[in-house]
Length: 488
Ligand SMILES: Nc1ncnc2c1ncn2[C@@H]1O[C@H](COP(=O)(O)OP(=O)(O)OP(=O)(O)O)[C@@H](O)[C@H]1O
Ligand code: SF4
Ligand SMILES: [Mg+2]
Image (cartoon, rainbow, N blue to C red; front, top):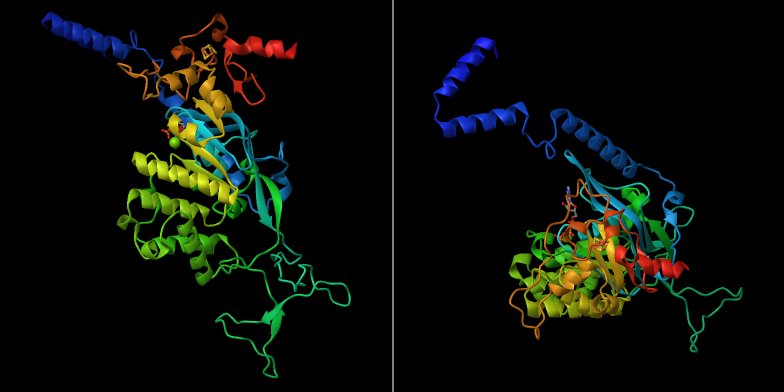
């Protein structure tokens, strides 16, 4: 603006009423930057730099996941404790967004013992779902990535392959009346023989018109042929996507919060359940898959004939959630992840579904990772509890320890905010304040700005995890003296 123009504008301003002059000056101040608070804004240059860095990072991780012919040595590993089925070890899952890196899961370590239910609680946005999605390799890509240095060990079962990379069938052998195997003159077990069938199910005959015979493969009660399997431990965080597809859906399955969005509205229940079996169970045919579907529907308390040919919209919410559970069980998984499985259901149906989950877990000797906001659900279902806050674990322990002896001020706050039937209160307690901005986490305890028990030490670095009993750990400076005592 020239000097002449400036003078003209000033002259015009002189004629304005006072309130208008004030408003104009305030706007001028903001534009010239003198009073502007720039701490929450990104300059164009900065935004471009962040977007470029985020793009590079996501591309690096995407390329890594899509590599072909990766040697299994890269992702086959050992469990730290053989009793566990999953071990999350220093898991970091970040979202590389155009405005910065969201550290959704920031150094999470816990394990799920075989045959147990581990409940994960914490307020909305604390990283519960992202933790479970990292285990399934289903974090929203390309922004969401599991960062180098993280480990997710999963004890899986895999098919044994022969030198032609074919699965090895398990055969049926002839038995003696006392339950021992019949042996031939060389001391080898004798296979039961059966006629060979072609693809259309017709008996194949030799040149003399006699049926061609072959060793009979062992089948389960649904008629699905059995193959030799072995136990393998995979590090899911290092596994390329093509290998992950083999265990996802078969060895680990997920039950989502809202069954209507997870079931396909244009296919029948039967079609969708059969498809899961056909896709993941080798040797399954349309007929045997249907047998398995019927078995699973019965297991979840549904009369199969009533729903097999129905569409999802024809079922009630509770029935749909049962179907989702049947679908999750169809491949007899070792781990079921249930992400808020009962939030969309009313209280009576909720109780039935929880009962069902508990019953099924025992029947298949599986493990459950149960994600919920509802402390009541955790108390009823879980053996161990993991409390998360802002992408980190702040307390873990057995259900008894977390409910009867909560130590972290956040866990104590959570317990206080739970309604109790025999304790009349005017207003339910709510923890004041908000979770810090995930793009810009502080370098002190993330709960400090909301904590009512702060001490001088809390101004210092983020607290370490302190072991207060063999199963109980807490990340809070209030208990750091306990750790010192232990080390003495
Ligand atoms: N696609 C995404 N892009 C960027 N940030 C994301 C994305 N998905 C999740 N996040 C962030 O990751 C964090 C953890 O999200 P997550 O869904 O795990 O929370 P949660 O604990 O499951 O919450 P809720 O109880 O509401 O389901 C949140 O801060 C969320 O903003
Ligand atoms: S470390 Fe300090 S601020 Fe954080 S929860 Fe414990 S007492 Fe509160
Ligand atoms: Mg969630």
